[in-house]
Length: 124
Image 1 (spheres, one colour):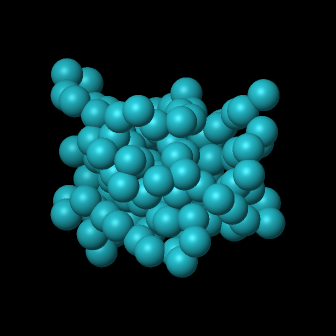
Image 2: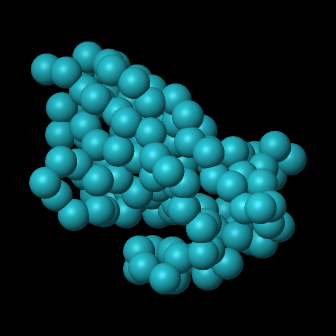
Image 3: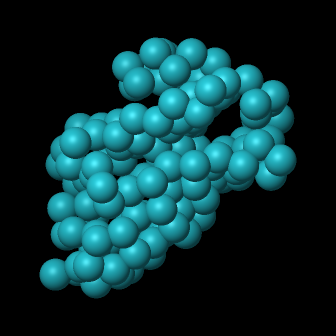
């Protein structure tokens, strides 16, 4: 059974930090590109950050560049999102996702696997 389980969300004040983790199982982790998406109340889901499976290419949406860092530990089958200098507009449910194709993953649909999400709330 494939599972992506996010953790690390919570309530934090503006300017604070959180580290999200997503533990994967049930598929060949090394062969998959990984990404973090978020969905704020009343808004569409957006891609936040992506990391390729092969050569470690990184991508970030402009609104988080310089503040968020994505990384992966293939030995632990885990992907991380370090979030610093958090802003109230970062408040959302954060989901991790996995797909063999980085391009497909970045498109945001027809993705192989999704986690159930973890809530991040940033207070002003």
